Length: 365
Image (cartoon, rainbow, N blue to C red):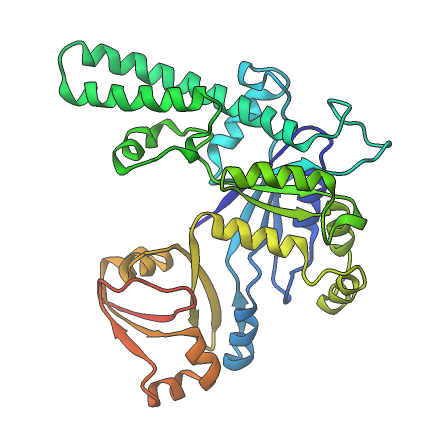
């Protein structure tokens, strides 16, 4: 399954620097491919050290990681919900992505002007939140107007829908985002086709200068307090450092550079992994002499649907799956030894795939 994350932020917060670092970066843990589809869209690999282990043990002809598509969305200004600036383009692009990477500026630099002159990441966050909320209110109002017409006929279902829509409308009107609303199955089903902007999961990226990359600063402190009140997710990253790291040719060179500045891992690695988990995604593997490959599925996905990610015939004709846990494969060193030690399981249609499962599907069509 494809995963698309959109990078958003006000002008001059480091959004494009981060995007360029992501799409120009060498593979983070091994020599895996990346590419750029368009000037503002890049496909990057999801770092997974387990692939390196499987490559060493299986010795395949090729290794294929799973990927994320990153979209550098046009900058936003106040009034975007009314079409100001590139507002319409910005909002349309957000509507198409699965998750949002929201970059806020947490650094001072007299050579880079701020659109509002003063550095205040909390205010910057609220500006974008407000514009997205206003657009969602406009979307909800149109749906409410439609439901009211049906409710007037005495239709019970329309009356119930109208009550739920109005309650969600009031919630967003209070300055809240739809993702923080108590979204039970009924309301999820009702609003699924509305493609609300504030229902999308968000990862906040505090962009700091190089000297504050390890521990943050006074700007990140206040911002993190705000995000934690919303049970939100955040990372502290220096886009400038990540841009430097992307220029190194080898993994070893990047690690030495990181250690020299007091970091134990690339911010981009953390960002990619966080984006991946933000949508409750996990990875299973197929491993053979031709290729070792990572596949993306959502948590709680059963074996037939997981097989369908590889090919629809696999799901349609699913019989069973041979499953080895990654830890068992790593500890024992091969599929054959796993079989001999009783660590290969046969699982049926109701099996829920776990992160790291190494799978071989049996099917008949």
